[in-house]
Length: 119
Image (spheres, rainbow, N blue to C red):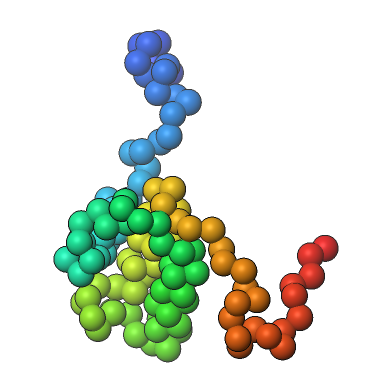
């Protein structure tokens, strides 16, 4: 076991986010998806107007269902569905540009469903 450093910068870094533990391959996958989105919608488009949370939830579900159906690569982007899920899960909500959930009662297909019960 190595002895802890007494360097003030090392000491200050101990309580900070451990960025070296992130996986470069995951960061690259997210960046590839964000690049695809930038080409499709314009770079930084999410900064000008917030996007509804359910838009992201729906996209995540579609990519997850494609994986469940045996499809690893998104045919439109050529990128892994899992990379799309990672980007859509992390990026928008952390940016603070996600619009709140709309009232579910506005969806006609939910009209006959009972509200979820919480314990």
